[in-house]
Structures are given as structure tokens and as C-alpha cells.
Length: 185
Image (cartoon, rainbow, N blue to C red; front, side):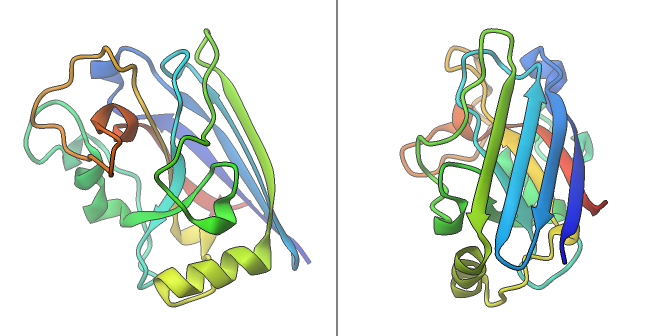
């Protein structure tokens, strides 16, 4: 038996970054696999885009961030500001989601038009085991998660108030540009 989920991905921080990133994510979970397909349009061009699902380890229902989460009033919702409504970064949509290694350079890169497609089939048991190791439960609870797409051009001048440095990756990499609620299809 399979379960299908979708997320309509809408722009975030578009007023500042000058593009309205949007798209769609589809997930199909079977006994053995999780198939993930994400297509994005109008993202910052020629840029690597981190993408993940976020949520609360305790199973609370995550919601997408809006400009209401801009607590420091700098005109941007940065990664830490999303946490109150969206929870923490959980599973990356990179070349190996089941390893749950978030900071890396193996995420999709948009083309000159700001378009990219991401498609992967993940071994579900491996992902669930790693998820349980990190978050204490092997239930991904996709319908309680939100997806974020991150990343702006390195030459975009961001205010000093923008937070979200992860290891060697600065706020240009982690700034959310789009988000969507994952729902059962």
C-alpha cells in the first residue's frame, strides 16, 4: 500500500530577493521506498538550493512561516525565525536523504531561468532508521511537516541581522526562499 503526499510551494522573502520562487513537491511512500519529486520555478538563477522538510520531533503539526515570523523586523524571515512555527530541519533533499547529512554541496542547482527538478527514490527503512536515531521515532509523519527551499545569490546584500549560519555555510545558503505544507493527497 502506498501513501501519496503533495506540497504547494509558495514564495517567502520574495519582496527582498526579487523573485517569487514557487513549485510543487510530491512524495510517494511505499513499504520499501520513498519517492520524492520537487520542481521549482523562479528561484534565484544558477544557485544551489538547499531543500528539506522541517518539523517538530514531538509530532506537533508544523506550519509554514510567513512574514509574521520576522521577529527582528529586518524585512526577511531567516532560518532561526522559522523554527517557532515550522520546527527544526529534519530530512535533506540532496543526493542521499537517508543519510540525513544536512550541510553539504549535493543539492540541486537552478538553471539560468531559475528552474530545477529534483527526483530521487530513497530506501525507506534506512531513512526511518536514521530518523529514529536522530529524532526518536521512525514515523516520518509527512503530513505534519513543511518543506523549505533555501538559497540566494552570493552577491545579494543581506542585512547583518539575518541569521542562519550552518557550519561553513553562510546565510546566503540558508535563507528560505519558498515553503509549503506537506499534505496527504
